[in-house]
Length: 119
Image (cartoon, rainbow, N blue to C red; front, side, top):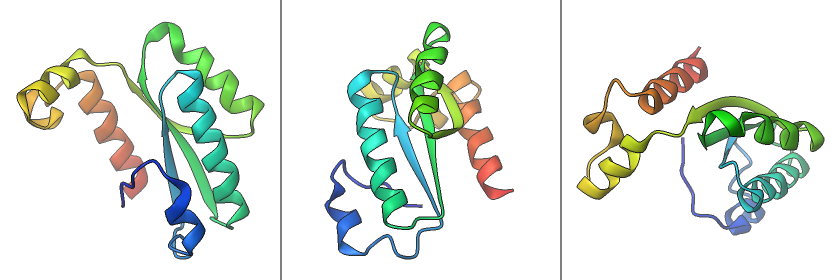
């Protein structure tokens, strides 16, 4: 797994030739979802076999927004990470959310995503 900065440059330099599954993290805001859409299209054009969306920081009333946008653009949502205020607290404290709130809803969702990817 590799977390890359928000730039398509790495994708256009053949660094993705061994990628089997690309996860694109998108927040429920137009600019973020539109960026995920552009990366999704590029990843498909580069021949990455599986490209999925992970919806991040999603509040209950935003679930449909992400789902509708993804469906309109033929993007599959693999998993949804709910908005969790504990993440912001962990960031301010300089610790990982897993260490700060290991039983919170955000950490539980990430744990479920990791298990799903390993299966």
